[in-house]
Length: 67
Image (tube, rainbow, N blue to C red):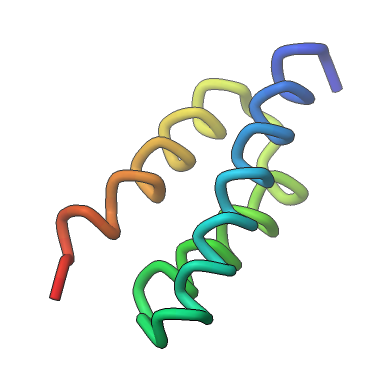
């Protein structure tokens, strides 16, 4: 694990926790699920480019699927 992977993982975990808390308080399923996935998926992805692409996509997803 290199430093960039560690920083991206920390960033996505932090944003994921914020989405999770927001989704739970607002009872919104999309931010809640995106938050859980953002906190968990860095453990399974070791490629830095793939990690960044999937993470950024998951951060944008609740804004696209707004209900």
